[in-house]
Amino acid sequence: MSFARDDPSTSFPKMLLIIDTETTGLDPQTDECIEVGAILFHVLSRSVIAQHSFLLPVASNSAEPINRISAEVSRLEQPWQQAVLYFQNLIDVADVLVAHNTNFDREWFGKGPLPAISKPWLCTMNDIRWPSERQLRARPSVRDLALAYEVPVWNAHRALTDCLYIAEVFRRCDDLEVLLAHGLEPRKLMRAQVSFEQRYLAKKAGFTWNEPVRGAWTRRLSEREELLLDFAVTPIESID
Image (cartoon, rainbow, N blue to C red; front, side, top):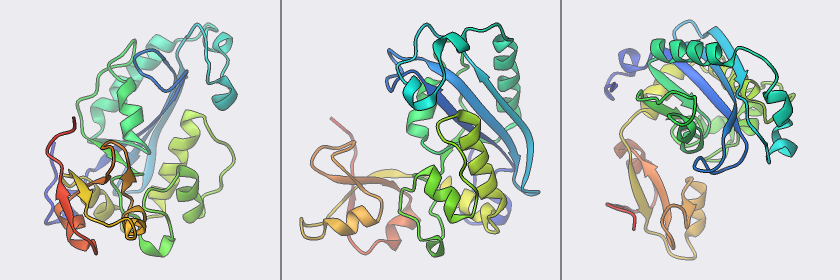
């Protein structure tokens, strides 16, 4: 599904599925997803339609000190298979999936019991350019984003909690339709053409050093975002 750039009033997605995961580690090839949280959000009414979270059984969880989910608790008897089916139903009615770091979260789907997802993703950390008056970094943490919109922060590192933060931020966005439409614009990976002395310009604009391209400041940009920069960029056609 694609959304036109020229008319945000009609091209924005109408139903979002906000997703977060908790995992036993950082590598989808060797670790497992232990928890999924999801909120179905209707854009026009700024309404939460459904909330859903569930644990998946795992043998061990090396990330327990962070997410505080013990492997033993994950194996308690509960209808997690039915929870996965309901999660698929939520995916089916959503136009776009939203996560705060899609590069991480999307890697866990299509593995183990979690369904593969073919619908578009939108990253609230990398794709949405939050209003300057919120005084956020170019790539804000979910905590900083919530606080910037006066959303109380009471817990961290549980899947549904982070989904609630994003939903509450969306509810407070008068210009949400435009933010979503712009966030879904096609992007290319670009290299910042800055000297060592000018590197602060790239960092301020949300470019990252050495990742995914070694020895370069890079960021994925739309054509519109490229025109807003005060330094030159060049496209990166491939990554070795």
